[in-house]
Amino acid sequence: MQKGRIIQSTGSWYKVDLGNEIVQSRLPGRFRLEGKEVTNPIAVGDWVDITVGKDGSGNIEKIHQRDNYITRQATHGRRGEQILVSNLDIAFVVQSIKQPKLKEGFIDRFLVTCEAYEVPAGIIVNKMDLVSENGEAFVEELKNLYEGFGYKFFSTSATEPNSLKTLNEELSDKTSVFIGPSGVGKTSLLNTIDPNFSEKVGEISSFSNKGKHTTTFAKLIKLSNGGFLADTPGIREFGLFNIEPWELSLYFPEMLEPRRECKFNTCTHLHEPSCGVMEAFEQGKIDAGRYDSYIKILESLQTIN
Ligand code: GDP
Ligand code: ZN
Image 1 (cartoon, rainbow, N blue to C red):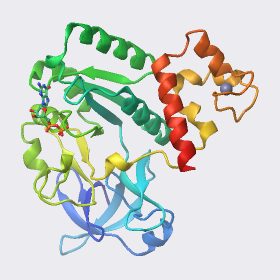
Image 2 (image 1 turned 180 degrees about the vertical axis):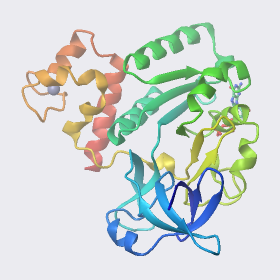
Image 3 (image 1 turned 90 degrees about the vertical axis):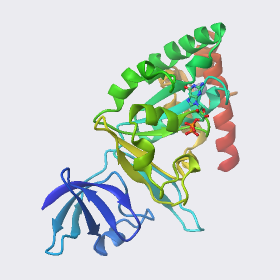
Image 4 (image 1 turned 120 degrees about the vertical axis):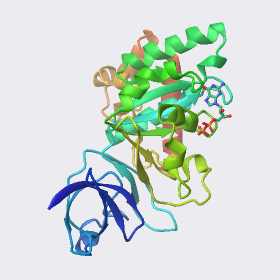
């Protein structure tokens, strides 16, 4: 038996990376029954044990328990959730300082999703070469705010390789994913970090939806720094569909302490009496922009649920 990692799946075949070789492998039917609550019993990013037959193809014998995974609602009218990728070390939200303009709401929503999935999160603010003078102070404030919550923060220019040194180190030997609207520079950043990136993505990819074909299957791309990057179509649709409104503040690190003072344990920190979070906000202990994001996300949850 050999341990390897699923780096690509087509639904019937799985590519397993054993470190020194990649083996096309099959998944016995019994796993499909075991993984009933999700539409895919095995996902890109999973660690598996395989046996390799005489013809060189693999048989998946065991799926190791996942550290974490992110999902989206299954498509094509199928019920349940689809695992997009598993065993992520870090997920990055990418924004640009302008073209398109940075959206703090996008960042906060992403961070909440990562908290809910127990995936460590980081923030990349790109196109720093386009920043104005006040813009620099603004980015510094963002950095202090988010680093204060424990998130990694990088400001970069894809055109300036020196600005990518620390990010490159962060990505090496990790499994990561870049998420952000189109045009912020995800592909450019990755091409600067690994000049062969676009070639590796190849034509079956839909990274940034620029590939020739779109596929609903993810893959892991090995970067030249040793890290894996998940190229995951549909990842922008991963979202917050299973969160109850009262749970939301659990995913804002700065609200964890104050919410203990709330009179009601289902407090949504909007209008309830004796609310620790509102009190902390009034005392200036919670950033106004973050509280604003909290309210917007809360409202969107209430329309879903
Ligand atoms: P993606 O859709 O997020 O993958 O974004 P791309 O990597 O395709 O970049 C979108 C556009 O922004 C391209 O025209 C890039 O040349 C440009 N771009 C990317 N990064 C930077 C940067 O750091 N500075 C500037 N000025 N332009 C950038
Ligand atoms: Zn409250």
